[in-house]
Image (cartoon, rainbow, N blue to C red; front, top):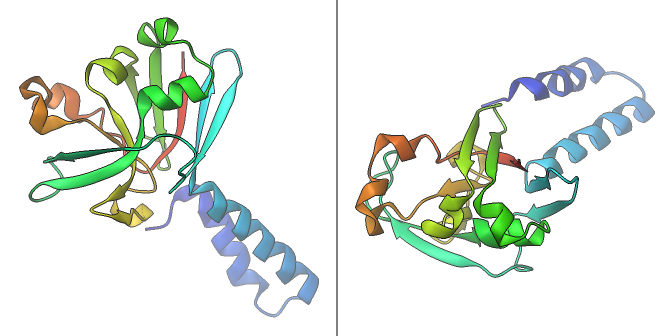
Length: 174
């Protein structure tokens, strides 16, 4: 699946075909830069402070959730960084985070607002692995907001399902 904002780069590759080496080299640099953006989640506070999380990073404490989802079959095991840990890494105090809104933005421009309180009440996870493997963009990755649905009956409600943003690229804390 090709994302709309990458169509221009893809078109440039096709049109370069017989162009000079230098033009071809620059095109490849652009593709590399775009690909690296797919494996990095940017967390930005309203103060302007930010934190970048690379998929598979072990820099921050990781956690695991085993749960069903409305989009997959059977119990899945998700691994990643707890949302509250990411908020702290971005320099956001817990008291402020609990009263903030986390705007999750996906690669396809899907946006959803998540109450900051969810990070603490439900131990929401920003997963970058499912069943022990990295998640490619074609399978909900590189990052997916995951709630421990099986552990809390109230989370088995469509009001929470829309908060499960996948192909996550950015978190804005307001």
